[in-house]
Image 1 (cartoon, helix red, strand yellow):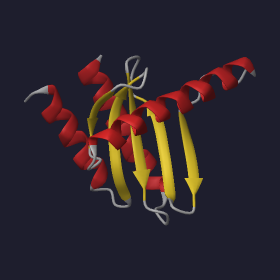
Image 2 (cartoon, one colour):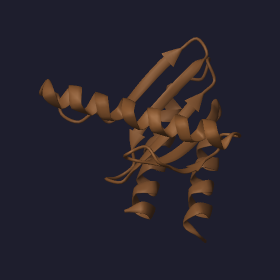
Image 3 (cartoon, rainbow, N blue to C red):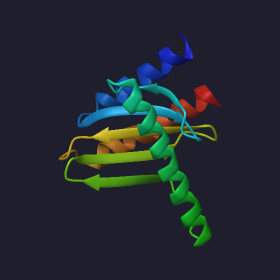
Length: 121
């Protein structure tokens, strides 16, 4: 399987958890690697802004002496956004439905980010 096919399978597995509307794998600097978002232009912006958000959280948290955060979760009335590191090179980004419970989704995100880390180094 190609790298893209492996990433597609990982993201499809996350979607099978339920409540996940969209997902993406991006580089740490916000370049889109693979996405399940239907519109490519929005996916690229989604990836870039998510990377910026996690980078800001990492800077803030380390400056306050709290270490590097495992993830950033943004909750709104329209849904939830979860951004987590997937190794030194990549991020996993998940967008959920508004009423999705995060418990099982976060477990699956953790498994998926580890697989992505192993694929992308």
